[in-house]
Length: 390
Ligand SMILES: C[S@@+](CC[C@H](N)C(=O)[O-])C[C@H]1O[C@@H](n2cnc3c(N)ncnc32)[C@H](O)[C@@H]1O
Image (cartoon, rainbow, N blue to C red):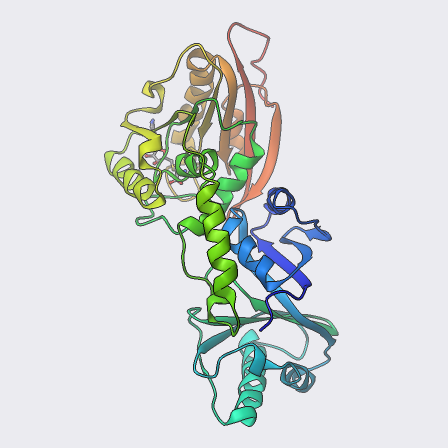
């Protein structure tokens, strides 16, 4: 397969991350054609897909379009899928999977649509030279993705395979961890300049502190994860991959790094965070401690960014008991953090009000099951009549 020819690329992300994903894609030098709540579209080659896979922190899948076609039912799907020159794309001694996002009255189960596409691919390849690749549900080889809405369908190569939203360093999840892409998106939404100290009390398994360290040192996801679906396509992906990996290695920032301080009251959580940080290659950038969030060692006399992700009564803890914790977070910001910006990521609006400070911004994010907010507070000493709950 040719890795130079351009086509449409659609990069998917978790709901709410598109603005931050768009920023990342633009920073890499691409112009975004359009964006939706769940991704951004641009033009580029399969070589560009490799670059996007290795660099993006907020993405889930990098999809490369093989063609859009009119599709009124399963037979037309089969014919259109069979018209694609799979013999130039998928090795017959390999393995592939089909995934899909389908809303169409003729399709009750997406499994059925997947099987029609799989049959089309296999039939074409077998007719071509008598042999065929294996296929199955596990995303460990090449991946073909079908997007079908109404009378229009599009087939893509999913060049990522397993989701990019997981950045590959989490050896143990800990309790109620944030998804890595979500943590990265919330950090990109803050005013943190990657120079002033970043403080993460209630760090749990360390996702925010680790993502902060990855951002500050410009350590891109491709330096941690080494398996992608594009590695199972016909063609010279290795040349693009090797070049991009060299670039990532050369772009690492190793001096003038900011202090990153993380703490949690649960010693087991901090142990997990340390292991995850080591797997991410940033263990020496984070100062961990076991303590109540109010006892977190704070640098004095310089601006700070303080970011907390307290429990919010959905999975852990009880909302009533948490009210006192949220009030204490407001007191902590007032007393211990007097220069910079404070952030609280929570999925519970009522608990958020207990913080008792006026928010500067409220940004919407989503976890798998819940609409959440990133609340921003300006931190300063003295009083500026800032104790208005909103
Ligand atoms: C929602 S979890 C944080 C998850 C984290 N963002 C991650 O990705 O793993 C909340 C954390 O707050 C910690 N915690 C609860 N009360 C605390 C307190 N008073 N002081 C310090 N940590 C506390 C819990 O141990 C838990 O690890």
